[in-house]
Length: 149
Image (cartoon, rainbow, N blue to C red):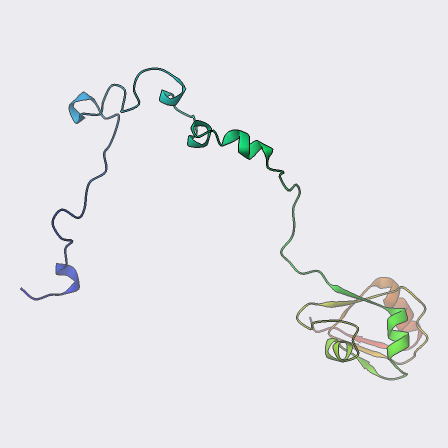
């Protein structure tokens, strides 16, 4: 007989069938199903943790409440920061913002917020989200907003 995947079998005595309890007296584990007579441990619905005395320990551990989202939040950049770091007619995109030290990473979306008064005109915003208040100020100073994300 040749050795192939469909002919491989485990060695004799290595596989043991699990004991099925509560399947009648003829099976050898009927009546009390290996749990003895009465008492809390013999009842159904009692967790193993309670039996081991772990329930009190679990109750003493402080639980962290609420929900924490795994989605990354937008990185905020305010208009007063743009005033300090840019000049008239320049482009504003995540790479340039990172080079100028306004953000740490380009992997997360950047959002321009309207804190401060925009004093620079003809700025071009690319690949960034813009709040409504910032959008009004950019359009007032004849700037462009080009969103790809």
